[in-house]
Amino acid sequence: MKNSLILLAAFLLATTVSTQAQTWKIDPNHSSIMFNAKHSGISFVNGRFMEFEATVEGGTPEDFTGAKVTFTAQVGSVSTGAEGRDKHLKTADFFDMENHPTISFVSKSFTKSGDNKYKVVGDLTMRGNTKSVEITATHIGSTKTRDGRNSVGFQLIGNVDRNEFGVSGAAGSVAPIIEMLCNVEMAEQK
Figure (cartoon, rainbow, N blue to C red):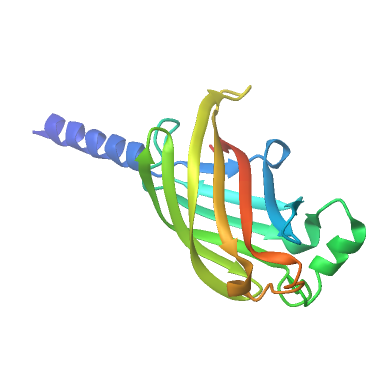
């Protein structure tokens, strides 16, 4: 009887350890958070955020169904390659960095939608306004880091109506729909 209880306890402990959620952190040196804005109906201006953090709870190198994503970008790090435009984007005409220094995203669902594809739905907060958005995530692949940890790569694509968030400056020349494109590499945390 005593041996049976020890085996049962060992089994329950092993089951508990194996079902704990894996934590993944974004590697900012191998990731990019970018956007495209249509300008004057004839071209696109692209930009990126240079400072950001993201964590994923759950998922394995093969399957991220049910994972939870949290993401934050620093508005002050926005870069479009034009210093004057970057300063303007930080003003109350656009992101209002003084009152809203970050942009954040928290997922509500992460569901498989095809081979290596996921639909990620969550709350995006920009300029103090929170709206539900949907992003398509493509799992690019998995590998091992030099120190033996698992590493995974994703490409995320989605559209945001900037007017819904109050980022409404330059309405006559900048289209309301902004394309998001994020290439991310994440490593498991031990």
